[in-house]
Image (cartoon, rainbow, N blue to C red; front, side):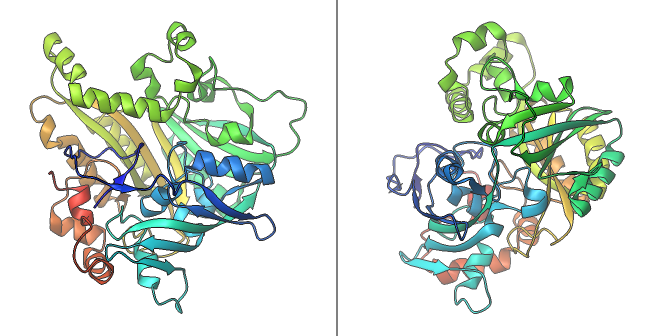
Length: 430
């Protein structure tokens, strides 16, 4: 059983299929919004782009809004979403008050947090289960009030250990140099060149004109070029989407001439994702590499969480072993215990996101760099999300993602095994 979806933010290899999927096209809207209680009932396939278009009209946003427009609410909860508010609000599933889950048994189960809920096991195990336990059809989530603008400060660090120390202080105090911090993320451009971007919600733009990075200018470049900035709230939410962080450069879209000719409506992450999917089908880049005599590429597209006090170790190792830059840094503090993705509650982690290809030669299909990343993250007490390729053996996978509990919950809600198991989805090649 699978979903018939038009878009995806997954990067796992999947075999082609002509089997019909579940038609979820009618589950893509906002059902209700309560501006007093600051809650919204939302269908599972509603994208955050459509969701925030509704909530911003009331001066509200979800507590965590993942950085890409076509990520769905249900996808962010059953998978893992993250953004700059995660240092104070955790992950998207941590602001869910109630949800309806369509299970493998063909039932719709309503579940909510709390020891008195008979389906609490499903609620707690659902995050990071990626559809192996069922699909969220309706979710009630908490919202937070926001003003019209976001003031940014880009603070440079030459030393990753000092950056990590500063992150700890900001998480503890929610401020930096006496100014409140509402959003926190960063970029490591090169060894010795690290930035934290500190966001402060504001209704007072102080006469400054907000920047626009949906046109000719590219957001990530501004981090190195200016100390402060101002964005509208809507533009801040999607600051990374226009150029898919920095990945639009692979399509030439950051070239001024190409950018002028590339329609603005096509400057968005889902368009780039479809282009990559097309290349995977036709193998154009591989053919060009072979013609030029270049070694085979390994695709290294991963997001990992490492404890903040191990960040400098991981970045140093990543430079030496993999060599991908820039990398995204996003701080997260989980507020509860979630067995399928067991971050330690209250501990500050840094999500390190790196996306690209590396020439490794004939071993590329075996994923040597991805395997090394998995091992190193595990050594540092971190975890890896499963939206992309994974290579764990079954024993290690079950240790990291609480396989025994996951199997028990799956058997309860999917006794006939209609849904693919998480290990089969994330690791096994079909």
